Every structure is written in structure tokens, then in C-alpha cells.
Image 1 (tube, rainbow, N blue to C red):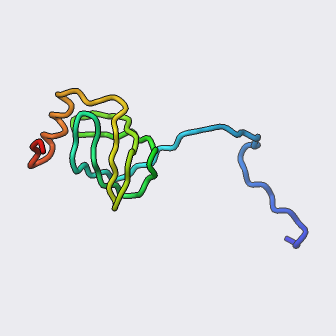
Image 2: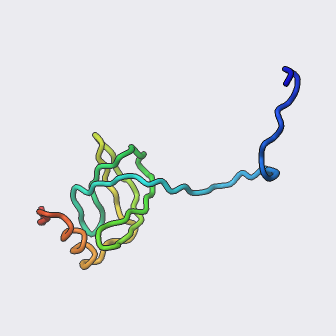
Image 3: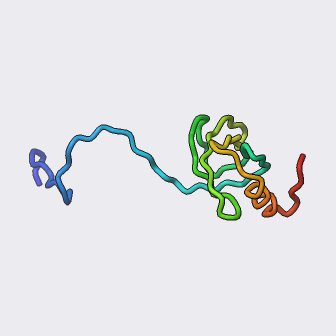
Length: 102
């Protein structure tokens, strides 16, 4: 190929402009430090900024959307967008070997 030759476009399908919002799901490790019906304090495997909304899978198959409201020294504080029911919080706490209210 000469310096003036253009490389062949290797795309499988034609592209079209599209400027819009999308979401991305990334698997990260979350270690819950403490919990309440309204949120958790946790350590994460990658830092995420305050304001990020996450879908968190908790013990017992419970899932909640949560917003990071603070981050400091590798820990985050998340507020659930919908609080945990008592039985869901009980499932979470039962998964911890030494869970008791503080």
C-alpha cells in the first residue's frame, strides 16, 4: 500500500451518525461493609464517581438500583432508590457471619 492509498474499510455493515444516550453494564466487585433498609456502605473494585446509579445484586437474589452519594478512601455510600423490605434486609444481614445492628 502506498502512502496515498486509503486502507479498505473492514466494517461489516455501513455506519450512520447516531448521537444519543445509552447505558453500559460493567461487572464490578462490591463488598458490603454495613447496610440499612435505605442503603449500604461498600468497597468497590473500581472507583466510581458520586452520582453514579448502580444496579446492585444482594444476597438472597435481591436487586436494587442505588445512587452513590459519597465516596472516600476506596469506600462508597449508596442510597437505594427503593428501600429494602424488612425480609430483604434480613436476607442481606443473614449472609454476613457477624451481622448485628450498630
